[in-house]
Image (cartoon, rainbow, N blue to C red):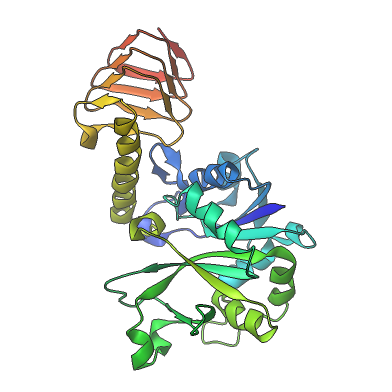
Length: 316
């Protein structure tokens, strides 16, 4: 059984918005929904979104896509995982993913699931040239994760480590909930930190591994609108490169927006300023002109799509 827990309870104060952070959109889709759909793509069978701030909005947006657990009050990342009580007793593997890690790919999520074939938990890491104030991932000589150290607690030697924690994890589900019983809040913030699970697992003789992401941009979180735009730009570049290699012509890829779940046929020409989102499907021999917005639309073969807004419809 493949499970997942999405940490989606925060408001996202730096977004300066009444909307929960995880509902802000990238490539035409709420960040939390992007994560859910990528999890499903790599085989997740049970997904629990841990919600909090204006949780009714998140539940409405993800209705039918996953289960929910409410975190009130919000007492840290470890506490958020504790709230997903419906997964207690489940066998199998569980990923824990931040709700603002919208650009993470199904391939990376699959690699995390697969890492548990040889370990009891795994941390998704990335190597940064400038690791700044991120928590450092400390390994032993065999490559196993020993601990995750917050920057303020790092020794001078640990500060020279460039491998940092992305906040995304994989666990043997039964061992996860066993270890959560030993998590405490003996810290200045009086919060339960998921990072403390590494040392609890090791104390129990369970193996903690690491999976390193290839591209730091894939695992960046979103805390403000500048980072949202940066993530959108990076994901758009990945999506457009895939379609260009597949033979789709774009007059100006930098000004062409295509969602990650769109399907496109052959001999398609897309002009700048087009946005194609949701589950839209573009047929063969189609021309999409500037100023076109498609969302969950199906475009028939041979169609010239003129400027306009097309949603939940067939264009011919």
